[in-house]
Image (cartoon, rainbow, N blue to C red; front, side, top):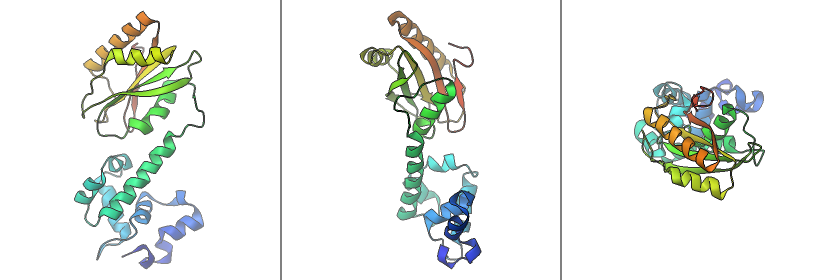
Length: 226
């Protein structure tokens, strides 16, 4: 059953036009992207099944590649999988757009707002640094390393090299935990101390180390652990 075959009151497109796109349920939004269902199953029912499979957590669905969707969900072929992935990617890119070209960092929430769209959803660890001016404005963000699902290798010398070349007054460390648990590990603690100590020698302060997940975060500065 396609969207056009639904009753007028159940058509997501008409509801979006009449009441606003924000009034649609997650299943109705998925139905618009999918366009059609399966024999004996409406596109709304198909969308509801996909959402049930990921516990109605869109962040879990967004982590899946098109090939994973095609393999996992009956009726989701190349066109549907690519369309859904494109919708998630547009959302991520929109969230990453910064109206201020050099945003000022005032709290860990500012850091999370910048970095979660970049790394909160990805299935592997990435380590980034934010280079700041004297006024705590971000002059540059740099991805230092990309690793596996549980760790990534970070070279302190590379971090300091970027900071020195950019004449940064201070830096902020940030990485993600694909597991969804934002609590730092022992290696996270050791790495933070090592980079902070090296930065102090060079006169470059480490203001914070923030660990982000799709739904939560941990700030060393907020917890008094720097």
